[in-house]
Length: 215
Image (cartoon, rainbow, N blue to C red; front, side):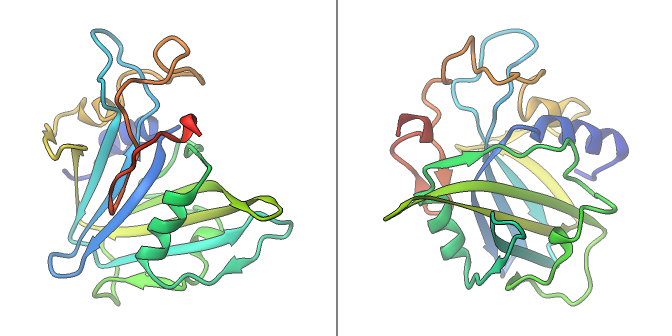
């Protein structure tokens, strides 16, 4: 799927409030996968019992990930591997959903999103024609309580497809980006104020046993 203006607009809406749960990159196929848990409800019909989705990016030339402290001013922290990214997401006590209504082909995402990345993968050095900017504000448990950090990343790619957590594809139609999440924002509630059933967050190492909201 090419991110045309209509598709980009739908994706930007659908991904608002989504929680990033994991990140994978396959160097041999230049394919990146971003695992998300969706916070949207459908316009009509039954609620999908599994709100997990996978964004599949092909033709990836560069994948960048940065880690920041949530202090004032923020400090960029060292990050060595995707395993470390996965560990941070898996150990998070709280992951806040993305917000801002703009994630695909952003012309000016801000200085932090274009800062030099400690973790950079892909064949490079040129960058593909499309970009996806994601972030996860997470809270980690420490001996003294909790520590807030920010993960953010940029993927430069050629093609994007959508899949459910079980690997089944979502058809590439005009409405499919919105179908990635549903039809309308949950406005802070899920299925009438309760957590959507049987929706266990996933990381790149697999399915975690408990939702963050169960902790």
